[in-house]
Length: 114
Length: 114
Image 1: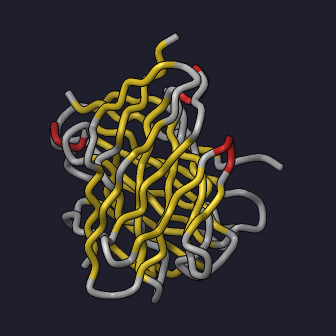
Image 2: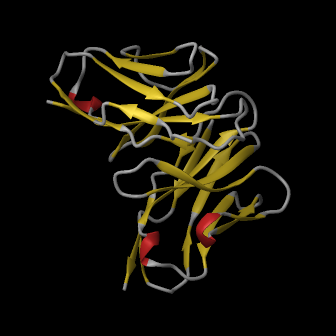
Image 3: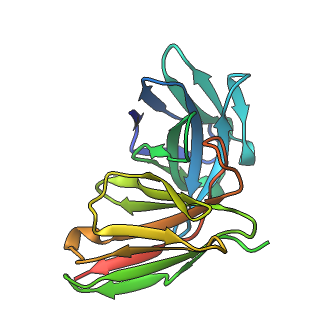
């Protein structure tokens, strides 16, 4: 079984400041890792995913994440945020085998202040 | 290309009733998953279908059921509604069979049980 812990439920930052959203996971098997974003009253949209290879993954809207196997972490970063980045961000994992089944963290609400 | 369409978007039911939610995936996508989103439990996997077969099921009681039709459209049904079933129900589709695929989410069906 897998589990995901997002270490911060809310993160307030000022516009143009850098941000890091933290995610740790637990799994007895190898996993794929994902970050999804949910804007108000919308569904989720994939930001980026780690399947294999380079541990630094670049996604849409200037976001990137680094997979750290020894620390079982997959933190999301952006060097300079914009008001439009205000949303809820979800880290998720899925087992390599079998059907699609994402296990999500509880989410981190990112609030950008002008 | 049209996105994932979920109907109805909002509905109100009373305890003991049953409800059916519908999901039309992106054209060509054969995998459809359902997730329940609540403030307390977050995003939880309900089930996943591929080519009309349920491949995986989450830890929900038997009151929650689903099916997929030959055109990949999917429905989920909740019988004997309880107050705790109030949630946003999200449907997602994918073009790939494996767990590495990107999920494309609909905007959800918000169910309120009174």
